[in-house]
Length: 291
Image 1 (cartoon, rainbow, N blue to C red):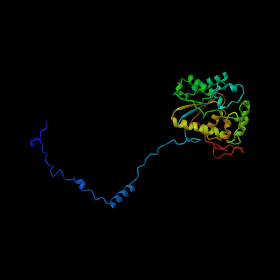
Image 2 (cartoon, one colour):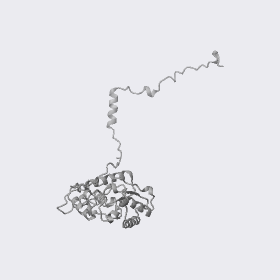
Image 3 (cartoon, helix red, strand yellow):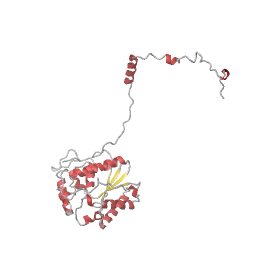
């Protein structure tokens, strides 16, 4: 029970006069006026600014790049069943079909490519495999992973940027007719093969260039100081990519043609200084964008 008697109430002494005084430092503050604020602000602005180191952001990937953040190996998948028959097949509808897979010769070519990568030490410290989902390219990635001791979790399927170049009306024709396409490429990087109504795209070199640039932008953003093995079902993706990275005239990409199962290293040290060819045919002042 709480007592209400006066004796139960504890009396607190009043604060001493000394403790109620304001601190001297507060009393000594100058009277804040507009003139005082302006003077203080002017002193702050006049003070030397601190130097801050710039942030080295990667930004938008452009061709040719100033540097590469990763080490790249370019691999063309071995011969497909269609190619063994000497037939052009670039319709993306067919890319996951069994007929788009590796032929027996193509499997041997891919094993050779995998052993070459191993001899080059490409995946000694592990590596990422980026194949097109085209049947032969993904099969090639699986063979490369098996021979080089790479976990399947390091295989990253690419769904569109590495599709074989669509050759339009050349679909179903003999492989030898690819030379006609390259003749068109040498005229302009924007020249497209004739169209066709079966859904096969007719892509120019410029179209392929956009795709592989987008791919490199993803890889350079996603990885750093890694090794990436790019596995393409055809040559044009890789030859256009190499020409773009090296700053060469894209109209001449066919000079960098990749045979089935061919492997090349592409890193910062392999980017040469571009030299304009002594030719009246090729005139380009802004490689690789030449038209």
